[in-house]
Length: 291
Image (cartoon, rainbow, N blue to C red; front, side):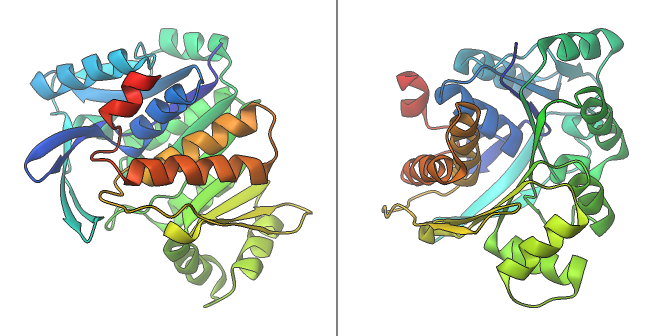
């Protein structure tokens, strides 16, 4: 059995000319493994040196990699990252392996047999029809799994239609405060008010819970038919926030799947996200060695 199946991009974040293995789905799977979950990822890597290095690194972390395909046509994905006051700006390169994620019938059968308790995905990997269709096949094949959607908007690689389609299959939604304001305008033509935004989402979609992260200020948790909860952040001297949101998501899910309530899970998410923000790279070596 797999606790968490992550779907989407595996890539190398190049920060100050130094490559760090990343991609939100990979980051989330890695931190979930560090938090004690059995994790796997569905993705695609190029048949190149970067792809082989990424696969080796994921294996070393302890992520199940059997469902990552090797693409002999497209290169392994890379992202150019520039840090401004510890916060990243991205140039995400196109025409790469993770734009072409597929799952063979044999792998689909194996995934269904593994019965993942949760499946996690974002918006970015859905920029291509190939990967988007594969994701939808997985979601249809795993009706009993908790579906965790981290909106994670990047550049212009999203459409309102993709977001609506994703929300229609989401159990828990995670987004940051800027994304919440943007989607409030896009979906509901509203300018302000996270409470109204959450109510409208609950009324329109089958979402059961919403996490709005607010950087160092923590997060807000909304649950269907329950009051919202503000969970204060953990103050640290941030040096590199790349991957902090993914670490938050992983710790939240690990706690939730272990039976903790949403507030307690969010507290653990805040702690993990803050810790990662104090270290270089999305998956700091020190944390991997400690698991």
